[in-house]
Amino acid sequence: MMCRRCFFLVAAAFLLHGFGAPRRCSAAPAAAPPSGSCSAAATCGKINITYPFHLRSDGFCGYPALGLDCVDGNMTVLRLSTNNNTVLTINYPTRTMFVVDSGIHRAGSECPTVAHNVTVAPGSGVQFTTADASLTFLVGCAGGGDALLPSPQCLNGSAPIGCDLSGVAGERSYVFRGATATAGALPGGSECARSCRGGTVTMPVYAALFDVPSLSNLSTSYGRVLKNGFEVSWDTSFDARCGLCESSGGWCSYNRTSVASGGGALAFGCVCPDGRTRPSDCGSKRALVYDYMPNGSLERFIFSNHSDDIKSLSWGKLFEIAVGIARGLEYLHRGCNTRIVHFDIKPHNILLDENFCPKISDFGLAKLSVQKESTISIGVARGTVGYIAPEVFSRQFGVVSSKSDVYSYGMMILEMVGSTRNTNDSNWESSSDEFYFPLWIYDNLDQYCLDASEMAKGAGELVRKMIVVGLWCVQVMPVGRPSMSQVVEMLESDMKDLQLPSKLMASHSES
Ligand SMILES: *[C@@H]1O[C@H](CO)[C@@H](O)[C@H](O)[C@H]1NC(C)=O
Ligand SMILES: *[C@@H]1O[C@H](CO)[C@@H](O)[C@H](O)[C@H]1NC(C)=O
Ligand SMILES: *[C@@H]1O[C@H](CO)[C@@H](O)[C@H](O)[C@H]1NC(C)=O
Ligand SMILES: *[C@@H]1O[C@H](CO)[C@@H](O)[C@H](O)[C@H]1NC(C)=O
Ligand SMILES: *[C@@H]1O[C@H](CO)[C@@H](O)[C@H](O)[C@H]1NC(C)=O
Ligand SMILES: *[C@@H]1O[C@H](CO)[C@@H](O)[C@H](O)[C@H]1NC(C)=O
Ligand SMILES: *[C@@H]1O[C@H](CO)[C@@H](O)[C@H](O)[C@H]1NC(C)=O
Ligand SMILES: *[C@@H]1O[C@H](CO)[C@@H](O)[C@H](O)[C@H]1NC(C)=O
Ligand SMILES: *[C@@H]1O[C@H](CO)[C@@H](O)[C@H](O)[C@H]1NC(C)=O
Ligand SMILES: *[C@@H]1O[C@H](CO)[C@@H](O)[C@H](O)[C@H]1NC(C)=O
Image (cartoon, rainbow, N blue to C red):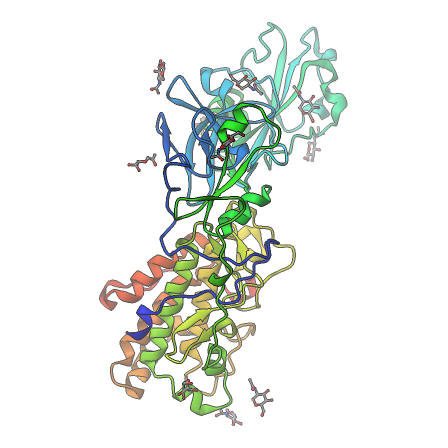
């Protein structure tokens, strides 16, 4: 297969991110920074600490705000302005971590006291995720007779805490649930806290574990819920210097000596893959490749009025192109230090060279995924309708991530397959409500492959593979979709090992 060995170049790699700098992915997959000038990975207890985190006491390679403490040699602590948090897990691929307020962590699960709000300030390097909800406590309300307690309106939607939360006998405390990590507002307004010595305290909790105890059970189980911690994602976009360095394949680092001596501004250095430290980035302008594409974009071959063009692409060639694009996306998602989510995978943006090797172009919409995936902000709907994953429109489907590209990829290869049909319903447009090709092909797979086999010997297998993979990719929920590397695996595996997804995507009108 010719395209397998194409080196994948990134054309026109100007990013939306605002750096205006050429992007160059190092060919090696995301790796730890070179040792020496940059600290290698460290561990604290069960937590692996690596870029962009670092131990405050140790190295200083990574984002300044993402320094961690290792307490007692086994407890990793993330400091926030409001509190210290014990790190439970760090998930580097998804750029998320679970943490729990250190006070809560140390306390027994029966009746931990809640004394402070837990919030994350802008610029703190981390932020809550949509997986978080909150508990708001009304702490230490006077107990000298019901008249002194908050009014029933104030307590609407609350459960009384079944223990002495404030530590003062006779005082009562109440817990409310909030839908987001910061939803601390009491139903009755701030005057409700007047008769409560401890005031209100809002703490984030992990929402998935939140529905388990009913409100009344929360009276006794709030400690358990709090101890499960909450999720934060790390946001590295606030440090433009690091972003620029990373986008050129480097790792940002700070001079420990000048930090220790407290000498004003941190001395910044970009540690490059060759091990050298440079003042801003590793970029060599020559890395930017504007490729000349002799054969134009894939679109031309898919939606062509020139029937010769499409006929010139055999099933085998289309399959090669599908694999090539999958490899290209895998490369973009996985092979770079800072992952890219392209957001606009469509035939128009796939360029074919003279060997019909695909190259992905148009990074106008690409976004450096240096932020946690769920926090990629979609100001305006990006991409092209029909190729856009449902979650880009509506959070109810999940978070925007590299899986959004997988969806676009799936739509595109289904379209590549569909566009070669000889039938009269080839007026399929992905935006058309009446005819949704993925649904149609799901029901007509066997017949379709049979037809393809008749058109070209041996084509049935390739067509079936593309369709099955495409259908997996357009699953409506991101978690149901394979990753790009799984897509490559599927395309290269034996058809016998591939199964149709059992459930099909939701109807198209939902997206
Ligand atoms: C930490 O890193 C080591 C070595 O790379 C690895 O074997 C281990 O599974 C990692 N632990 C976690 C919790 O990721
Ligand atoms: C962590 O270290 C402390 C003191 O060194 C020890 O008492 C504690 O049991 C350790 N905890 C774990 C989970 O290893
Ligand atoms: C976090 O812990 C450190 C070290 O124990 C302490 O100096 C600091 O005050 C704590 N921060 C907060 C907000 O409690
Ligand atoms: C927590 O935050 C709320 C709202 O900002 C505030 O009214 C309350 O006083 C804070 N509680 C504490 C203990 O600081
Ligand atoms: C409690 O709140 C619900 C809506 O959240 C409202 O329907 C109900 O009337 C309220 N009850 C009282 C006693 O205020
Ligand atoms: C909630 O409490 C009730 C009794 O009050 C109990 O039957 C039920 O199992 C509890 N549910 C959970 C999830 O703990
Ligand atoms: C770090 O800063 C100190 C003093 O500011 C300087 O002497 C040293 O050369 C610097 N180190 C590096 C690696 O730049
Ligand atoms: C195809 O031809 C029709 C009629 O000649 C024209 O309206 C349409 O724009 C053409 N489409 C493309 C993609 O060139
Ligand atoms: C693709 O480009 C090559 C080289 O320019 C040319 O020979 C070939 O005819 C082109 N194929 C099509 C279908 O345009
Ligand atoms: C599709 O069918 C319609 C009538 O049903 C006919 O007018 C049209 O020419 C056909 N188009 C193709 C491409 O066969």
